[in-house]
Length: 140
Image (cartoon, rainbow, N blue to C red; front, side):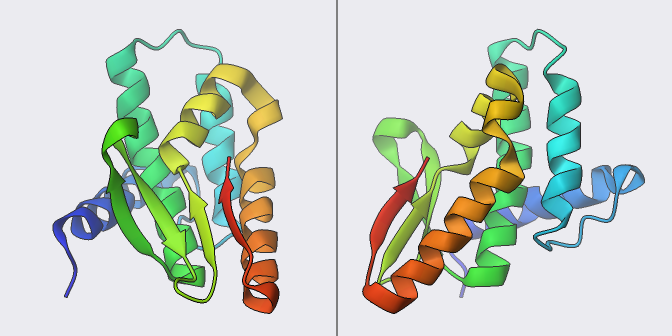
């Protein structure tokens, strides 16, 4: 049974995929993150207020979370002091955590240096290392 946080993230991610279907095939594949990154690249040219930035971060971040969870598993937790969810993959054997909302904000504010596919590749490598060695990390 899914908890409310998981339901909310799935629902938001599926809404993102539907709402942006004219921009690409958002099928929760790792390859689809390139199209998401293209959308975020376009947003770099705009000055977004905090509400708009938070809204985009929630929508795009939920999609990133679901790509990770559907491909590698994991559990969502709410982190009160960061006021956002985290996805933790691999517990109890290993623990790889990502904060996708922060990453989306960084991508919009910092540009290409915070590319989502590159970030996600780091997550994949950490998961592979975790499976082999019990590695624990937060991917930022």
